[in-house]
Image 1 (tube, helix red, strand yellow):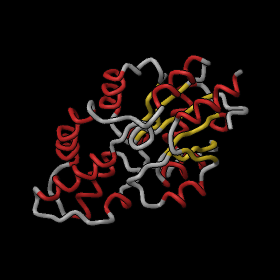
Image 2 (spheres, rainbow, N blue to C red):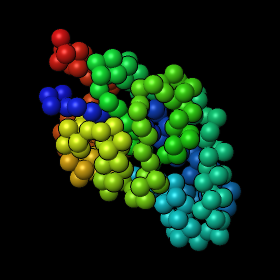
Image 3 (spheres, rainbow, N blue to C red):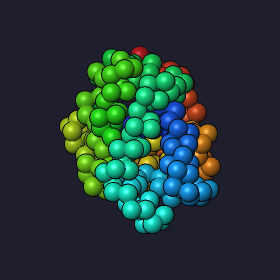
Length: 220
């Protein structure tokens, strides 16, 4: 799995931190406050979008007059403190630390906000792991477009084809593959299309402990 890998690119939400249920709850609460029932397919429709694209989508789909900026601010206020209490994927922190110890450059390729991700990493003591955080809003293209993955690879100075990307959504895996990266699908119980996701990916995992052992074996 790790042969010829010179850098690692990670998604954040659902791949490292168990936050997707939180965002589902935010969507329900946000729409309920405006007298709108949350559609069952909403998460699937906005999969891979950055917050700016999500806000524009909400404006169009639900005929909202809220500005993009006000929606992003409201969503951020709803989740900010809760992020510090979310659990992380089993074994993920030990895997990240070992990968750092054996000198893999690592970057984040996320649809979330850089400020929030940075604060959560700092709170968790993981800021030193990642050399860069690239966001979908920064590159102006949502997953499955490859732009955010290419930007993340550029920032750590590793060719895309030499990167291993970790993702939990179909759009994320597709975006990584379109960037020319090998992709590891990370199981997320809140996604209903796991079979399709793992079929698209080069590898798949249910937790990081076994992957850590594989990486250790590779370097010993």
